[in-house]
Image (tube, rainbow, N blue to C red; front, top):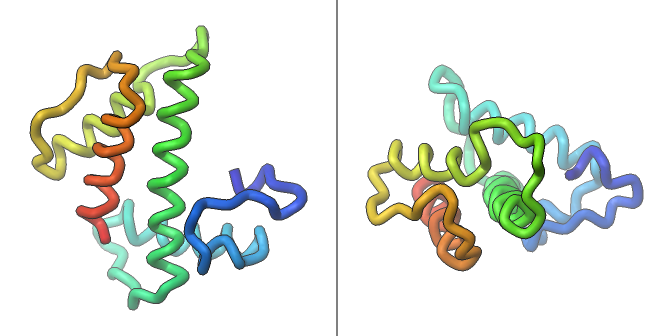
Length: 120
């Protein structure tokens, strides 16, 4: 989303992150992505910008789940974003999960928020 935002208008409801220039956002996302995905990567010292970047990642996940529900792609291969969210929830021990075909956007938003809360 950031890379495709030619005019710098892409907003994630995360003001410290949103205030960055697109190239700064990409650099921060690379740092946050490494910390989130690599066990050998030490957790960086938390700042408002890094916390906002993590929030932006989870907001993006919520948006793509909503898009997946509203505009299903015929050529989408497995796993779907909903399946990825469910797998992450299971990893974090979150119970009472939805069916992967559920179209309840509000319930998916709650699951994504639970994942975000588990990280932050």
